[in-house]
Amino acid sequence: MDRSKFVFRGDRKGDDAGSYTGVDVYFNPLVMKLVEVANCAPESSIKSMQKKGLIDSVTIERLRPMMMK
Picture 1 (cartoon, rainbow, N blue to C red):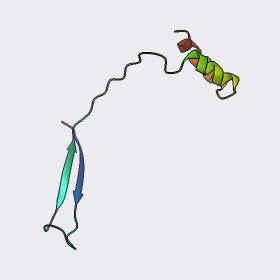
Picture 2 (spheres, one colour):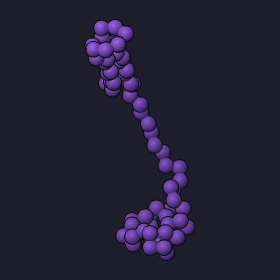
Picture 3 (cartoon, helix red, strand yellow):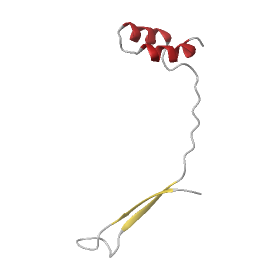
Picture 4 (cartoon, rainbow, N blue to C red):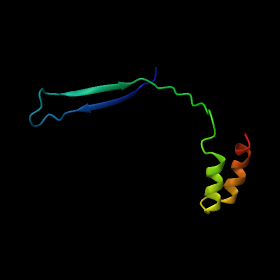
């Protein structure tokens, strides 16, 4: 299994608790499945942004099919 690892070692000079203190932390892989349950922005919000000039006409055309769902 491929895991991410974070290693921290203290230096040997100074007041370390031992001659070579440190910690190894291993992270198990995290698998996420993203599922769309609705449009992330309602059509009314997109139209409002368009009227205010906050969204480009090219972007509106790209979003139009999703707005019709």
